[in-house]
Image (tube, rainbow, N blue to C red; front, top):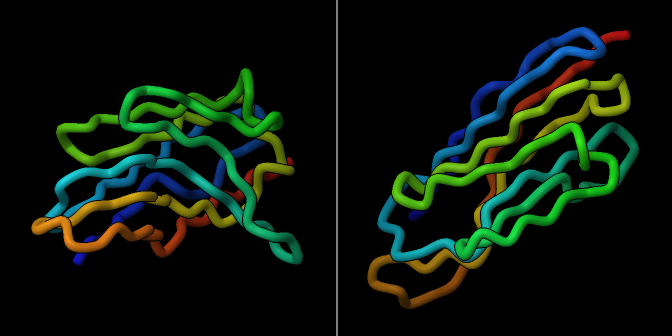
Amino acid sequence: QVQLVESGGGLVQAGGSLRLSCAASGSIFSIDTMGWYRQAPGTQRELVATVASGGTINYADSAKGRFTISRDNAKNTVYLQMDSLKPEDTAVYYCAALGVRGIPPIMIRDYWGQGTQVTVSS
C-alpha cells in the first residue's frame, strides 16, 4: 500500500512562513495529481493547491500570490511554501495523492495523509 507522510506544520505568527512537505512511499507506478487540502473546525475540506504530473497547477483563490506548490516526481514528494500567512489559514492541512497506480497497476486509488496542523496567530 501507499503511505503519505506530511511534515512542516506548526505555529507561526501572522505574516510568517511555513513549508509543508509530503512524501508518498510504497510500490508506486505513477501519481496523477498531488496536492494539499485543508479543513478548519466547522468547515468542509477545501482545496488549497494541486499539481498534476505534467506540471499543471491549480490554486485556491485564497492561496494565489501567497502559496507556492511544487513537486518532485522522482521522489513522489510535494511541497507547499506558504508565505504571508494569515489567521484564516489556520487549519489541518492534508496531503493528497490522487490517481495513484500501484505496482502492479491493478487499481487506481486516492490516498490521504493524516494531516498536519497549521496555526497562525494574530
